[in-house]
Length: 328
Ligand code: UDP
Image (cartoon, rainbow, N blue to C red; front, side, top):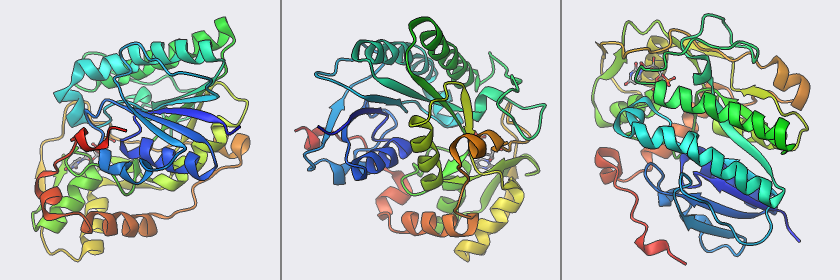
């Protein structure tokens, strides 16, 4: 019998790539999503497959899955600062109540649960690069607090189920990741810049652009998660690409990539925007024999090709979330 895995946030950017990976490894995949930020187009190609099922459900409410389950991956959550501002309560609930429901499900099914945590648990970090033993610098009541604190609670309750109930759990701390299927209008820097370049608009750098990020291509991230799930390590593990770049230089790379001749314009830096971020991946290297393989040039080319292939409607006003045609 094939292994059965529940993936929450299945219609999202990362969730849909994880569905693809586990389908290709021969698993029976149950995708779950409430489609607040997910997009059915991301998993449309999986819908006809006999080993893929989709449940339209909000994991903040009681989660029922019939039959046995071997693994649960909890990837449901808004994941961009613009989304946290629009839907702060849902963001808090999916990280806290949603995680609690999935822990209960995993315990009842004797399944292994991997949760998607984030570099946001480090906040605006005072330690650079960030190692897993750094406890972070988070503003609980700032605009990012709804995400950061939900994710910190998520790690805490996951560890509690591990130590108290002996549940098999894994925690991945995901750093900035990019690739095809990112939502064009979620406000994240890469779709923002590429969308602007394609539409002939100036590129909006926030602040003076000296803040740094380090971008990981989605296939590398998925490989790291796959390896972590099958490891026996319950404490958090950073997965990301340490190749750090300033946001201003990143904007210039996007202009060079797209051949756009617009300018860079400067806007105010959002509140609590981390000044620097770079994963220390020593642990992932030792534990999982993992490191990223895709350099930014190649990853950006693939991502740009995806955005160019979108319809005009998607480029200007991405319509999504019409679930009506997909019910099995
Ligand atoms: N950013 C920017 N212009 C944009 C969108 C984002 O300069 O149009 C900056 C943002 O202020 C941050 C960085 O790019 O410093 C990464 O932002 P993103 O929202 O992608 O992720 P996060 O801040 O969560 O890493």
